[in-house]
Length: 117
Image (cartoon, rainbow, N blue to C red; front, side, top):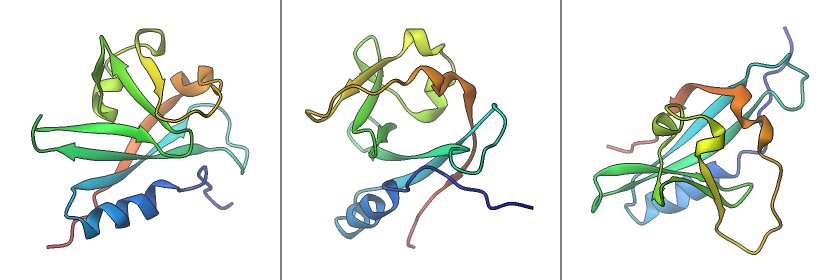
């Protein structure tokens, strides 16, 4: 059995940082439906909970992107309800756009909810 490898997990340090400020967040993972290749089998993202909106919002910390539909930020669960053509992928930095065309081949299979009681 080979090693299960995800894209760099930039979400984890941000999750720990937000935890220090009592901001509820969780690391979520996706896996590809394509054949696994040992270097890009999925992606790690971060969800942050908005107390004001009473919902989770998904962030791609590596790609510095947020995901929206009709201008509203989405959670990972909500994204799965739409085709990738219906989702707006917006930059949260001045980073050049990256091709997200293969995202429709991913499906969430698990989430790590980091909660410190």
